[in-house]
Image 1 (cartoon, helix red, strand yellow):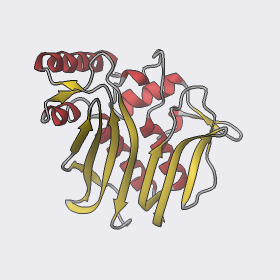
Image 2 (cartoon, helix red, strand yellow; image 1 turned 135 degrees about the vertical axis):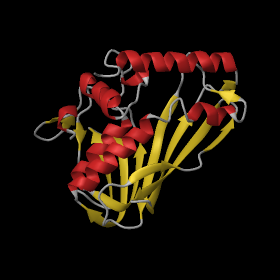
Image 3 (cartoon, rainbow, N blue to C red; image 1 turned 90 degrees about the horizontal axis):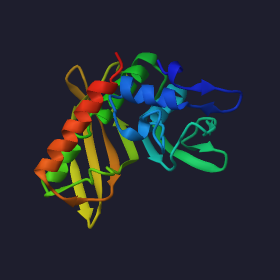
Image 4 (cartoon, helix red, strand yellow; image 1 turned 180 degrees about the vertical axis):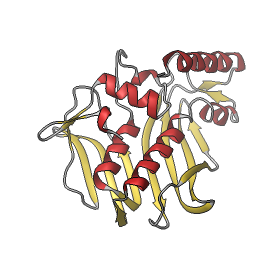
Length: 233
């Protein structure tokens, strides 16, 4: 499933601009301009790194991912032996910190299902969840530079004898001070209608300003137009 989106070299993994862009738009439904292949400051989607970890190390009952660096097309990512805690690095620089607890499943169906369902959930949160969530407190992101940075995420599974858990939105949260804020997006994992786990995605927002409905309407229209234009056939 992930092989079209990275290169495995002798002792490291690399991701081209085109691969990161294609993963964002065709798998994650994520049209953040940072993931455009011609972006001035290109960044590989954090959800692609998350997916590579699951495919390589399996799924643990408890998992926590902390994004510590911006991966681009020049990064040479080293994946160490699996452990309770380990770092994905680019040379001496830590790019992703991983913590795991409990039993581990290597079931391909479960891994592929969780990757697909999580990244779809993750990619569709902007602007349709984040903007209304901030709007409840009469603030919004800066439309000229919408800085929403993926900080960390965690998943807790009650059991691993599952194959295709669906993600369902749970109550999100937004707090801010001045021009900086933190968004927590929550979800439940359901297998055949039964809750089997939960998770959270944490993001940092900067450049917060007073809410303006006309500006929000323009931003959403711009985003939807980008999506319609750039969505792979």
